Length: 395
Picture 1 (cartoon, rainbow, N blue to C red):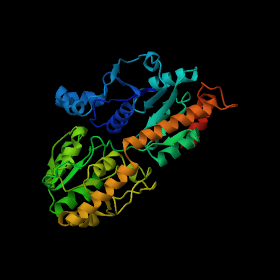
Picture 2 (tube, rainbow, N blue to C red):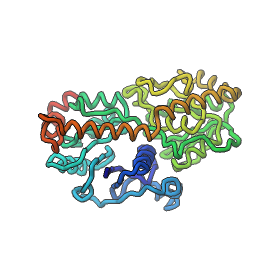
Picture 3 (cartoon, rainbow, N blue to C red):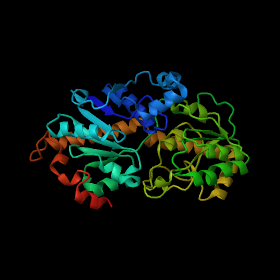
Picture 4 (tube, rainbow, N blue to C red):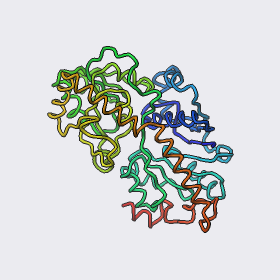
């Protein structure tokens, strides 16, 4: 099968977490013999920032870890016709220009012989709904949403029966425990500062508990303003700046434990979405403690796969216990690995994607169904964002 994916960037993971999952999924598809083509826009902000900070050497870790992957860059205002030529499946990520998203949808609605899916891996559907309504998805066969609560938002926008929950997962070819255990020390957190979405939570659930538990703390990530760096310094944390995601397993392997501090939207309005760092950390065999997060979909076994802290004091107690109890650390590692390997690898997600695609194509072929090669969404104007009816249902 020829699969075409439109991403913001495949090469850069600078503040672009979707690249982690995308690389693992595409690598798995290629390993299964599929023909994969990736397109990304010229001047993508993630790649531009990475190159500005680190030059071409910033891409070395990605290139070494994923030699089978590549992407093609298209200039602004490029017509998508040639880019989807011969495709069986086209997936368009939500960090793409609305004009491109609409243009690909028009090709599908006009009789394009490919399955077309929109892939949403962000909280903008609830945090910036007007920005999401700029996308015309009327020609799309369906939506891949990275959490059930996000799928519910789409159902409220008219996508009942045409939205699938497709969680992120760990690439087990790259994210796994070290072959030989070495020295481990202290705590590590790999995450970007963001836009003030979790500043108070980071201080309460990470910086203060690490200091109180007397655990050295290493922090990796981007977009840390001066006041954030000053806060890290006050707590004695060591800030290392950006780290290529391809190095994450190596970084985890040098530490006793890590912490999950969900962004506020995933702890409140969109519960049940862990984001990819949880999958990756557990796959790497590092004990994890999470700040309050509702595993609404039962993806994991809270208390067994990882510990949960309801407040800063409980986080301190958990970190202290992990510092002192090697058996507890080993138990969490075993449990977390068991769950990831059983349910949450990129291979599992590829199985799900192929099943979704098969369901869509077989539905189009059924007698009495809408014209086989026209997206059913194109016949329902209520799902075109921006309509009066749609705006009312999303409020």
